[in-house]
Length: 268
Image (cartoon, rainbow, N blue to C red; front, side, top):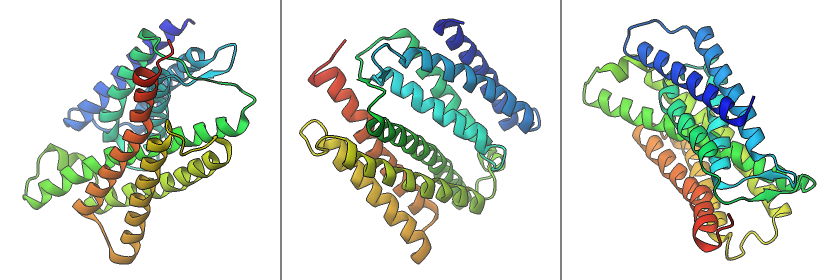
C-alpha cells in the first residue's frame, strides 16, 4: 500500500474508534474492550506503517516537525490502546484519536522541513526515541490530568453530569495519573541522561531553551511525585502541576522545534 492509502486507512479506523467511544460515553452502547481494542490496533498499525514509510529516507530517519508530531500521536494512540486493557482509560481515546487523525493528515499533506538522523548515530537515535516516548507518556498524563481536574471540579460543585458518570472513581483517576507520571519521569531521566552523552553541547544557543525547559519540567514532575508520597498531594493541585509541567515540556520539545525548523533556519 502507498503512504496515502495507509493514512486514509488509519484515519478511517481512528474515526470509527472515536465514534464508538463517543457512543459509549453517551451511554448508547456498552463498553466492549476487545472490539474497541481491535479497531484501535488496526488504526495504530496502519498509522505506524505510514509514518515509517514517510520518515524513512536513503540517508536515515527524518524527524522533521510533521513527522515527529505524527510519531508522537502514534505512541499516544498505542499507549492508550494498550493501557485500556488493564486500566479504565477508555475516555482518553476521545481526546487522543482526533489528535492522531489531524497529525496523520498533516504528515501526509505537508512536507515541511527535514531533520535527518543517520542510522549509525545509535546514541542520538536512542536519545530521540526516549525523548519521544517520554513526551508521549507525559502528554497522556496531561490529558489524564485534564480529566482529573474536570472530575474534581464537578464533584466539588456537587454536579453529576455525563463526565462524572463516565469516569472511574476519583481515587482511581488519580492513581492512574501518578502511574503515568512515574513512568514518564523515568523515561525523561533516561532521555536527558542520553542527551548529555550523545548530543553535542546541550546548552548551545539553539538547544538551551529546550534543555532548560526539559530540566524544569523534570523538576516539577519530580516535586509532584515526592509531594504525593510525603505530603499526600492530590486532586486539583496534582492536576494543575501536571498540566503546567506538560505545557513546559511541550514548549521545550515542540516549541523549540517549530522555532528552529520554521523560523531560525528552515530547511525545505
